[in-house]
Length: 282
Image 1 (cartoon, one colour):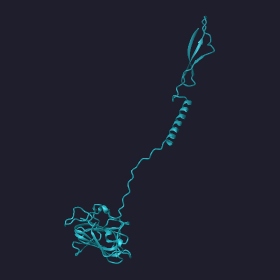
Image 2: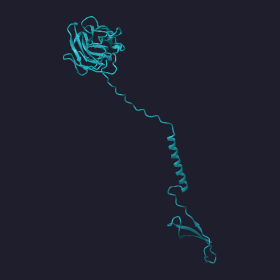
Image 3: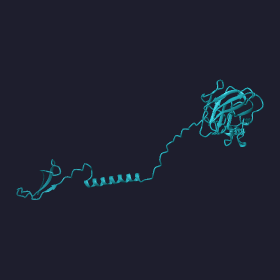
Image 4: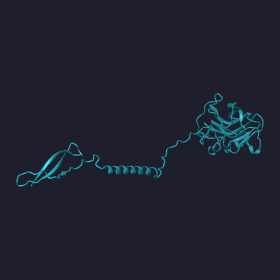
């Protein structure tokens, strides 16, 4: 008996260009004749070609389904997860609005542009504000010392000065209310023109900034004069366009002891009303 291995020319159905290896069993008798091949043939089937993706179709489908589920879970976790705190962005503070000249506690300020000052009396300016502000009580200083030399540095020498006026509307509206540093008190004059209020600083000082805070009954036209002896007066400021609020001007270049404010025209039928007068040294 002999076993013959033959290669047939029949193509593999999985790969048309690949031959099929088959084994044929042949039985040889002693007579030397080679009988016909057995009717049964055992075919050797090669391994199928590897899937280019390395997985079967079913496994690829399962992998795709798992990938979709993972993506959906990730999106759900992000959407319904803990709320992230918002980023803190710096907010710019609102710009401050200048409503009129303000009095600093130490009396310093930039000189405003010249409006209606008198020649030789320094720069002058008038400004109005809807609600007149009172000078801070801390800006008030003690009464001037005796002598002709003023202390160094600008200070409000009107605080504590002697004051008198041409008239008073009522006892509680005395002239001293205009220099007491209290924004709730005021001086009120009689209902006629002209009216004046005069400050005696007690000593001669080199003058700088002067601020007058009006009540609603303000002067549309008024003037300011200074004097060293109370007899000879020099006009340092005059306007015919007063609009209330706080009027600020500079009397720089004048060394004086007396300051006099004279109202020449009123805004209404009432008298003149002043909340505060501040006179700072140069």
